[in-house]
Image (cartoon, rainbow, N blue to C red; front, side, top):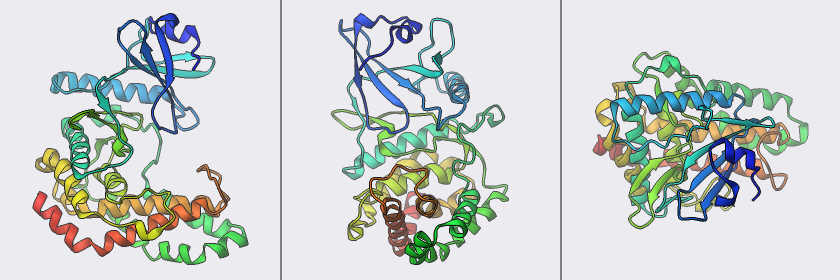
Length: 355
C-alpha cells in the first residue's frame, strides 16, 4: 500500500524505513501494518472512517481519559494507547482524513471466530478485566462515539417505522419474519424497564466484543489485551456480554444461510461466562446479575431487527451481495435467538455456577 510520507512524518517515521501492508479483517477503518525494514518497531496505522465515526476527536478523548485513569489505578495493565504525533495530539488530520498510530504487538494473533472454549474464555476474561478496572472511572467526562449505538428503544422504533414505510413487495416478503420479531417485543419492553432501574448502572463498555478484538498469544492463545477501542463509551453490561454470546456460542456467523447449523454450544457459553465473571462477578449489582442471560437476548434481538429494518428500507445501511442478504441475516439472528431461548434453563444453571 502507499501511505503519503507526510502522514508518516507526522509521527516521526520515515517512508523508507517501512513496508506498508494491509492488515486485519475489519470493515470500518482502513488498517495498515507498518513493518520495519531495519528490525525496529512495527506499528499499526489506521485511517478512521468518519462516515461511521463523525467525531474522531471523541474517540481520541475517550481513549486518553481511560488510559490516564488506568495508568494511575492499574499501572501494570496493558492498555493499547495511540502514539502521539510530533505536535502532541494522537490524531493527525490530512486532507480531511484522520489518522492514528498504534504499537504493533508482536507474537500475538486475532482470531475471527472461537475455535475452542479456551479461546472464548480468554477473550471474555480480557473484556471482563477491562470493565472491572474501569469500573470506578468518572463517566461524566466521556461522550458517545456513536450516539444511541445500543439503544434498543430507538432500534425498535426504527423497525416499526420501516414496517409502515416498506414497499409492498418487501413488506409481503418479510411478513412472517416481521411477525416473528414482533412476537419477541417483550425484549424491547424489558429494556425500557431496565432503563429506569437505578441498580442497572452505567459503565465504560467496549461495545464491540467480537473475539477478534482481543489479541491472543500466538502460541498459547492466552489473552494479551483488548483492541479496537473506538466504541469505548458509557453503556450497560448487557452490551459487551450480549455481543460475546451472539458471536461466540454458535459455530456459524450471521452470514450462514443453512439455519440448521445454528446451535448453542453450551461449553462455549460456559467458557465465556466463566471468563467474564471471573473478573467482574464481585463488582456486579443485583440487577446486573439478574440480566446476565437477558444480555444475549438483548443483543441478538437488536441485531436481528436492525438487519430486517434495513431489508424493509431497501438495503440502505449494510452492504449486501444479493437481494435477500439482509433478510437472511435477520432470519439467522431470529434462529439464534430461538435456539438461545430453548436452552434457557440449562444456560441459567451455567450462570448460577459461574456466580
